Structure formats: structure tokens, C-alpha cells
View 1 (tube, rainbow, N blue to C red):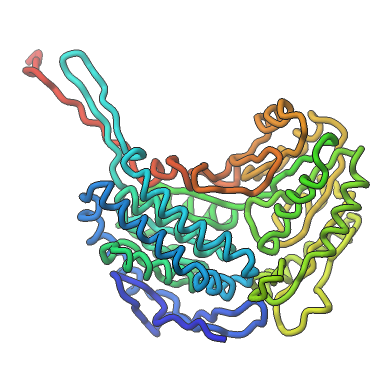
View 2: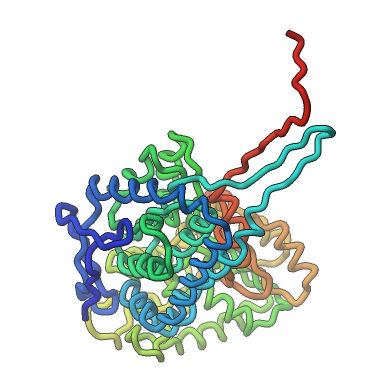
Length: 487
């Protein structure tokens, strides 16, 4: 099984190789097999990519929004036509089941290109400000060269979520995917060229932790958008702040999902499972602290255990598979260490907790795991695990659970299940998070803003709000008469 690209990087409309860069081995998580070997970007590659972006950006910014949008919408069409091929590549890249990737990964990327291709004109409008005889007007202008740094859980989606608004606003982008999932972004770059995007506007370079600083600190880079962990976000934001660059930080979370005793229990369980086990738990917005009102705790846990133990674990390329492997051996070991901490600190293991014994080969599989009787001070209730580990906590009343839910440095997402919509809105208003759901979980259509608060980041991806983060406001004052001066 191979997925070797033509070369490691895509710069100025073509594949580029530099074998002086460190070797990056791309492993298929289901088997541990090396499916591609690439090279990290050398400083020369970084310079070449940024130079191409800087050269191409002004002419692109000079096009009408309609002309830019036409190309983005064509890219969306090509992605949909190539959905099966892109989904299989995403599965090889990440280990996620094909039944997921075929409906959630390239398709959401295509949605992003289509949305931003269609709303550019409305989203980039300025305003007219009457000032008596004089007047002023504002306009939104692009930032220039933007850098996108991706994560490994949704590599194609993230490449599009960052690329689409950046390009729509008239910018150029240099995108660095995670070294764990280097393949998908190269295909996105190919598709954009096929759709008619001028060369140099969307460049992809490979790299590791040594590559990011070369991009972030480059004087020709105007903005950095990162999807990653909180520690990485702190480092990138600090570096960007040193040169006063624009930043968007989409970081981690330890999000609460609150289930009141009047909720539809089966729907709440479904939401909790999607918010913990989808993509093998490797989703930043997951509701990993599931607060269940004490009256329904036993029923909730019983039904949850039954449904969890029916999840089909297996070959990600088999459409019957519902749960694939973790993205890497190291990530699985990290999750297993958290499971050990949960046991050691007294949480009750309801199901899972180890490696499935019916899965053969070297894949990085792990059982979907549920802990009950979790308390707020336990490690598994405080730290982001980023794996299929659900923590169920008891609560009695509304004020109590809100206070406990907010007692975290994170603020990415939150959810509430209740039949009382007045309470649903009231609780959502009091929860300290950037993205919230009532009676559902983890739905992120491109039409709505997505992002966090507190240590989970700042800025927003998707919706018209994203265009604001890839542009800045220019104000023009127009004098309509002679200038009077006292000297």
C-alpha cells in the first residue's frame, strides 16, 4: 500500500523536492506500514514558498471578488467529483474509517471553498460614513502572505478551512500540514491549480517543529493561523506577537457536555458518543467531561455501555468499520497512560481501557473507553487526552454543574441536553466556551463561526467572521472643500 506523492512540497504551482531536508515517514495507522517518504522543508524551501506567495498575492488581490469566488467554487466542484479518492487518501493519512472520511472530511473542505467563493462580495464590503460636507469610507483589504499550520486529525478539512477564507480575502497562503499527516494538503494544492488558481497563491511545504518558527518569524508573513495544542499555541502566539503579526489560534479543550434528567437519554448518549469516539476521539472540540444528573446516571451508563461495546473496530478501508486506530503509536501510548491514571486515581472503568484483542497487525488501535465516578480533580477530568476516553461525572443542580463545567483553563466548546429549551439557552449563556450546542454535539457547518475562549484560543474559523480575520479595515477620509489652517 503506497501513497507516495510526486514530491514533498508544492510551490508556485508545481511539485518541488529538496532531499537535504530531514526524512518524514508517513505511516498508515492501521498497519504501521510506511506509505510515503517525504522531506521536511529546508530554509531554502521556506524562502521559495514565501517568495512565490509574496509575488503572486498583489495581482490576486486586484481581481474582483466574483473572479476569485469563481475559482474557489470550481475547486469545491472538483473536490466533490474526487471525493472517493480524497477520502481514501485521508483514511491512509489518518487511519480514520472511510465511512467517516467520505462524509466529513473532503466534503467539509469543499463546503468551505463553496461558501467563501459565494460570499466574498458581501463579506468584504465596507461602509460609507457621512460627516457633513466631508465623508469617509471603509474597505476591507487583504493582509498579504498568510501561514497556515495544520493538525493531524482533519488534515484536508483544516487545509481548506484556512485556505478558503485566506484566498477569498485576497491573500496568498503557505500551508504546513502536520508531519503525521502530510499527504492530503498536497492534493488540495493540486486541485486549486486545476480550478484555475494562479500559481504561487497556495503553497504546501512539509516540516516538523523546526519548520514552524521559520514560517512564523519570517518578515514577509502577515498572519499565522494555527490548529494545534495549547502549548504549541502559546509558543506560536508568542513568536507572532514579537513581530505584531495577526494570529488565529484554534487550540485544545476539555469541553463539558451537560445532560439534565429531562433530556432524551438516547439522544444524549448519541451526542456523548459522537463527542468522544468519532475520529477515535481525536477531535479538539470533544465533550470529554460528560456531566450526567444523578437521577438518570445508572440508566445513562447502562445504555452507554451497551452501545459502546457494539462499536465495530477494524480495517478503516472497510465501510462497515466505525472506529479506526489512533494516528500514531505515540498517541496511543499517551492515551493508554491516561487510562492508567484514571484507574489509579479511582475512576470506575465501565468499558474498554485497553487494546482490542481481535484486531491483528501493528495498527495503533485502542478500545473506546468509558470512566464513571470521575471527580473534578482527577487527571483525566482536567487534561486533554485526545483519544476515545469519556469521563462521566455526577451532578445535582444547575448552578453547581455550571460552576464545575467552567472550572478549567480551556474554553473551546460545550454542550447541553435538556427538554427545557429555556434552561438550554440559559445554561449556554453561562458556559465559558466559544462554540456551544444545545441537544446536539460537534456539528460544525461552514456557515457558523468556530473557535474558542480562554486558553483554547482566539479568532474564528468559518462563516463571515473568518473573512475579518484574514483582512483588515482601511479607513479613508475624504475632504470636500478647502483646508483651513491657523497658520
